[in-house]
Length: 501
Figure 1 (cartoon, one colour):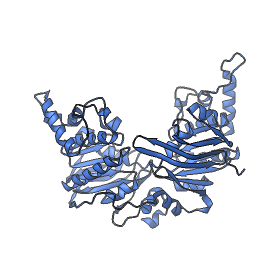
Figure 2: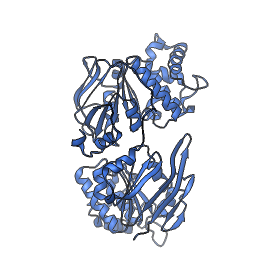
Figure 3: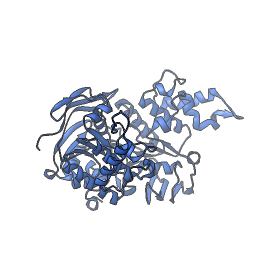
Figure 4: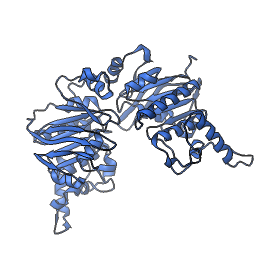
């Protein structure tokens, strides 16, 4: 069949201060896999939410089987034959496999009650057709991640979904499990399903995809047949922009090594990770989803414990068994999830800023509010935080100003090394410029900055050196002199690694 089963045209979605999708087009064909490719933040997840009824587009049209459809709810998308299999399966651990497969569309008897026998039998037949080897009567929590993915596929087959979205489905699977998933994808293709496959792994894309669509900055910038394009051409479409003249010029003098990680390992997240950051340096970390960058930083900060390796700060080996130990030593961490890990949104600005520095602001076991205010004022003014007063709850601030509160909190501890994990995620252009400018001030004052970022322009525009990670390992450490974005993408995605290294 040459006609698409699903078509999106002119899809636009805007959030306050952010244009997530602009005039996007996408076609999915029966019996074919279309790979959706793009950097983190390119708009892929927003598009999936539009297709599954979680978000409603501001403009544009969706057609299924040639007929325009409206998907105001997730249930409406489900009824239209659209289902999604996510990196983290959206299923229920306390229900049985059969109950998960038929949740929301269980077979009924003549009295309108659930026909449990028929449900279990049909679930068993579906699982057997997939050679899944799963008992439909066991609870989902007894299965591993790979088997849960199989249950999600069985659910798609049980509703006869015509469009199956797979969002990073192999991120947590072993190679053997990935091969089994490929077999299932072929089964879905033979059954005439249209599959949207989202992945950062080019070997996967070229292994199973028939078509590709590339997103960049919320727009569709390329589409076609996989056989008619090369990996390098797709990389060029992904990056396709200049990072010059966007970021502030810096004149910091880079000195000796301040912090060095040697052979850091974790049983499941990363292995043999080594790097060093010098005084007055911004060390960038780049990688695709699942590369292990944030997990390494959380280990350096003492949030998680390593199974091997050492951390050396100012020539002395330290053993941070907790975040408090790391702060005491002079290492602080601005997390990616600032709302969950960085601030207490229900508390005022001054209390958030003073929280790690209560020894400074307290006396004889009592807090001194005047000292807390003075400390908060000093650091929020340096960051040009915009708020009506320091008594304003953090929850009422914009994303950019919340980020400034987190940074101010840690600067007040007078750290030696500050780790910034996705420092400009979800904030507006003006706030991004303020954060970038302040990063330059930090290193000019002699601090060492480690910056984890998924945005290529930010990594290239702010870093002195760049560490590239893939699948929990350091692939390369590069001086940022004339470095091209294509080089970083190839390394992070595993394309021509030997040549790039």
